[in-house]
Image 1 (cartoon, rainbow, N blue to C red):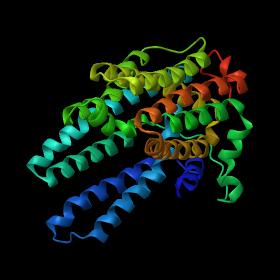
Image 2: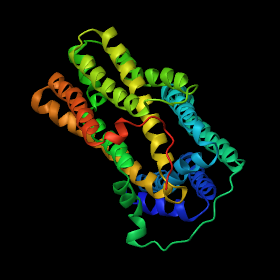
Image 3: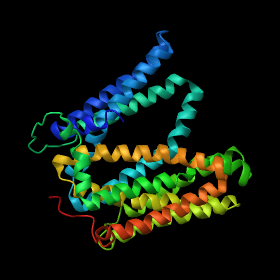
Image 4: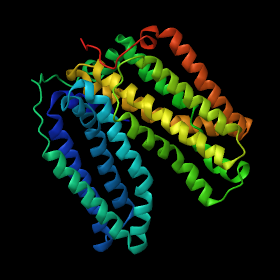
Length: 347
């Protein structure tokens, strides 16, 4: 949170590939440090926290540069396909990663962290081989005006503001995944296996949908498709909230993940394509703040609401609230509703 805006500024002033490589090197060394500490008998809470802090700083600095690099590597019409493909691999790892990590941990904790370190090393080698020629860079001082230029740009561009704020408020209201343990135990009356299946279901839906949209290009009614998918997210939340059947609940969560995948790819592509390359780092930094805060506060809000109203009413309020947000945003952002294609000139 503290480093997002400075990192966005750096991503617009320096070679983004260099920033990503630097971040990957620091992250690799941090994971190696997690392996080395117990082997060298230096294991302590301050040392662990220092490595985690170093890792987090590297992630924060790398993030806006990483997000902003993709549009420069391929034609605009392929951006949504590339983003969908990226999300497919991400969701696949969300499903497979904990299982693989658990199996490695059974062997030894060092094995789990060792494979993680090798994965970072592989990623470092791969990003180092990417052919990227940055546009002419204009070095601007890190003033408050330049740091907040991304936020100013977002408020000037109504479509970008609509897309980012739609995601912010929809996620704030739709954090039903925070309630999955309660639903599993008290409503669906299932055990750990059921909770695991519920946790994985949105990723399964996102994975399957991502494979499908990675082969498609959005050329017509893109705005309506985005709004429809956010509304579908709300409807799926309602179905899950009112379900007392584990199969129906799993199907609702699969649908929820699928709708979220489509809207996420469309929103992400619109933001990238509507933003000039010289501003992408700062705009993506602001967007990342909104995404991270909405995810965390959304789950917090859902938990607080559940403690006051009860689990099912809290989930119902989240689903209905999402539908209300969609209706309001369609009213106040007509250009977004009428938008046909992802691509739009970024002036």
